[in-house]
Image (cartoon, rainbow, N blue to C red):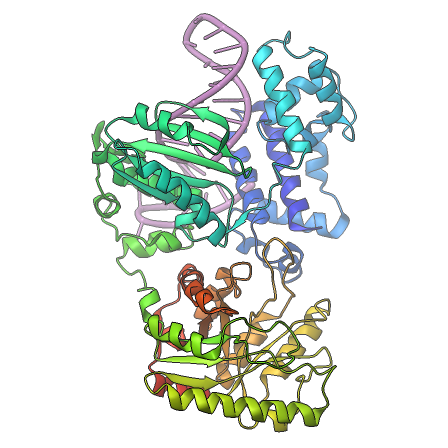
Length: 585
DNA sequence: GCCGTTTTCGGCCCGACTGTTTTCAGTCG
């Protein structure tokens, strides 16, 4: 069973409790919902956790749910769940997938209209709605009938399953809306918030907050954004629009004196806010986007720093706000000092247009232009790491010759650019047969190599782990490039035994790459966190194929920050001499 | 059903918006 399937099952149990008696089972509903959310967003396979007896490491999974899940994996079903859902029409569950449908609404409709077939329930309901059978039902009306038809149509078009945007794309979208909003004189300040501000690898909706003295005017201005396709919601303090690209933008507005509270509230994450509010409650305080209520009196905050300060806490960097222990440390004033973009002293994974036939894509900028860009970025060093020459179109001898010629070119670049250090690297494939793509002799004169996997992704976890360790074992191999091979929205990464990889890297002075390429962001943040815990060093690279792509470094740094990495965890924050020394270890 | 800087028992975030109501239910973030 996949994570999604298990998550759905638990969500259905929450819905079942809601239908049975919402007030009686209030806390079970929350518990099942929470466990379901956690499992849906898990970065590991829940089956692996089950096999390693680690189910209770999932937040929100305690003894009871753990045992139910064990039963599920052992026998394929859970007796308690079967008994619970007995008498609940199964046809409500597919409806829960459709936005705007919750347990209550689904149940009412299924019952009133006797829709019994789970396979066809969505189509059946659409048909009934179009025949006008919903409007007459109690607590429904003309408007809600139309809303149901639209919700189902959009669901069937696949719009709701829209893929999440990769972070830089969301940034672009936010940027264009921000520039529009800033043209209004009523807008005092505007910030993109939510998952975008937390720098999550993929962003669903774009969230924005505006500071203003005239909320109503600003909301009107926002909903008349030229690219708006539909206004989803419009109230006194919030509004949501759908823009022509099919993406949703949510807005909240607030007066300047309370803007800090709004920033905090709307940055999230949801779990961070819930935990923070529970903590505040224990001190007799109640938090909201308006401020902090203390004995019935509302305290307002212009800045986030003051808001967190009022709780006797450190300000928490947005990248950490995921309820992963940051609240406890902020209370103890013991948050780590995270790495910053300014700490980066060089980029080691760049592909120039140096002319030879590589195994994968060649870059589009000259070494000279890339060096120039590196200087602009204030770097002390730059590493060139084109893909190894193609092994299908060259003999071993040819490969050695090609690289000798390239060495000369790099020497030339070195001698004509004395104000930056050039490092002679290469990105070498680890083949499925566990060896490197090109012969040892061709690697001798390089400073080091980045080893990566670019094919045969479907090996087993054990085989893949062995393959990676074999590749990294070469004395020139210092960095594992894009370690999981994932492509956001396209391909899941391959599975590795991370304990083994971490162990090997720590003992043998190897580093894992954080690849800043927008649809890689690989290592993923959760694995960065584990690497930090295991004291494994990392490097942040852009994998640039053009000089301006070297500016993508900030996204790599944000991944590192989300993984709680400090400057000392990242090797390309070292000055050149120390970095060079590590390379030759 | 989960969980612990006040707790292994007794709590469990807070508010906006819409539609169908005439004071609220349902959904969402």
